[in-house]
Image (cartoon, rainbow, N blue to C red):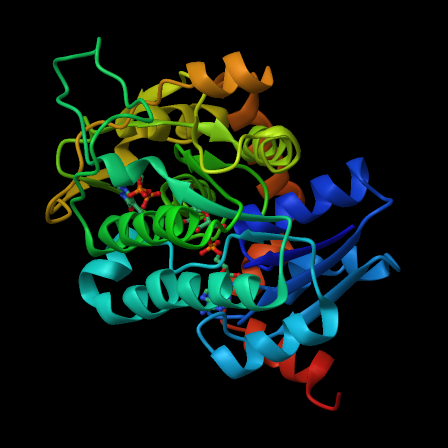
Length: 339
Ligand code: NAD
Ligand code: TYD
């Protein structure tokens, strides 16, 4: 079986590639990634050693390119991780989010219709459900919760989800969608809360907490997300949405304080800064459906996962140093400039 993984040079996509190479070595894997600021070929260096893995640079919104790739490769399964993924950037520059997250999804699905596919899987987010109030801890997002978005990022992801379901109903495209809570773990780009706080704390730099720090996120160790998607593409019912989350709700302040404690730093580093416009208050997933239908359960709780993550950042300083010093572009030209 040939699996096309888009956005595989980013955080979750790269973890998914390593999960697949380890658990399904009998398959062929192609990673398609535009290598935006968030994509990092260095992350895939070990994957490149595998004969059943190949990398192609390209944009999912480029119809001619995508069709040519499908014509040559004829993938059996497409898992679409490719996206502009950062809420703060979507507030500054929404248009790119519409192009990649909505148009890109449409182009990929059109190619699937044109060339045939066993499964198209859309990696979505719990942010499509909007947010929950902080004082109603009894409320959770289920797959039936209405879409109600806050940021240009979440609106673009919700639009893509609607398009995916429309392609299922109108064209019978065999699709599935997963909506996951906040991930953390290795290869997480240092613009996001957890890696940013780890790296700033290591440099004794201020830790910028938005607003009061009381916003709640439901943290899932990235490997648990990968195992859930793996189950969905193999055993999930076509046309269905599956929520993925592990009941690991923490306030941002709790997360930052845990990182400070693990690194032996001072809480004085915490700095409260102006809040994000439209800042979602609480995300909380009810993962009952994927548990009931596919037997999925997360394996890593937050206390263990954050330790593993911090250890990874301590052991892989060269990976994030190159990113934060902007050397990554030089690396790409050096490695691929002459190919
Ligand atoms: P990321 O920003 O780390 O990686 C995105 C990858 O997509 C990068 O490698 C980038 O180069 C690539 N890309 C961007 N635009 C592209 C385009 N037009 N064509 C081809 N490739 C392109 O993101 P991530 O955190 O790994 O998220 C992956 C997916 O999971 C996204 O769809 C995101 O919405 C979803 N998601 C993320 C989280 C989270 O906590 N990070 C939670 C739930 C869902
Ligand atoms: P983030 O990692 O950007 O993920 P998302 O916005 O998709 O949930 O942010 C997680 C939470 O942390 C969110 O409530 C915003 C907050 N945050 C900060 O307080 N400071 C920061 O520097 C960042 C990046 C995020």
